[in-house]
Length: 312
Image (cartoon, rainbow, N blue to C red; front, side):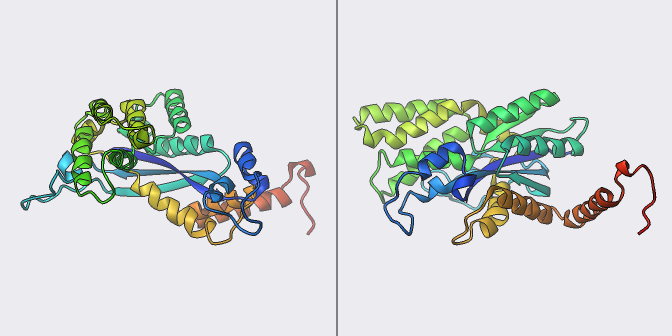
């Protein structure tokens, strides 16, 4: 059987002040530039991060680095690119209240599909440290072996950030520079890439502001190195990007919770997110039947009535 994948991501939801986490509420409490609107950079201080999880099945699709990114100078010849794995049987879940519950519920779903832990479990994540800790703890509790892979697209974004430390905006050589280092990362050379960027930054005598992009990339590659295992992932045919969950962020959250002018309370945002997940999973009818049965039991079958039949 093919591997079982799980992907996690976060998406900000604009909240009312009373629904923000303490640190975000403190930032939002600072006086703004305008009385009737938010200036650039002020909106993120009004958001609370929602955590989303997707569990799905995928048949292995082995690839090579050049199938993922074009070599310097672009592609030549007619060699057909090998496609990546295709997600099937997708299941979604999310919360704006408790990301630990999201991860636990995702593991519950994966375990329901593979109770004997006979399949290979691959977890794709955008790199958030607290999520990594929660995932590893949950896997240890359940005694299941997981393979954590950082979303390749996030790594590529850091690569481009580093590129602007060495190239002017619009320089066509930038793309080849990114391609060379990215292909090295895909071939298992994340630490060597970080060292090469550091060496180039030193030899170029970059100032502090000029080195910001390069330094951010170096820190990311060195701190996340254990999870940048793209060479075995390509060989084994695993997914390497969180496209499934990023798409879910759009249709589960952005299309409804991020509409213009919306400001959400905690209970309302949580209820809408859960409802949209149920609809996406095709489980709304089953949930509604359960809900009606539960309410009927609560209202008419209270055990405190001592077993007496109701007259009406």
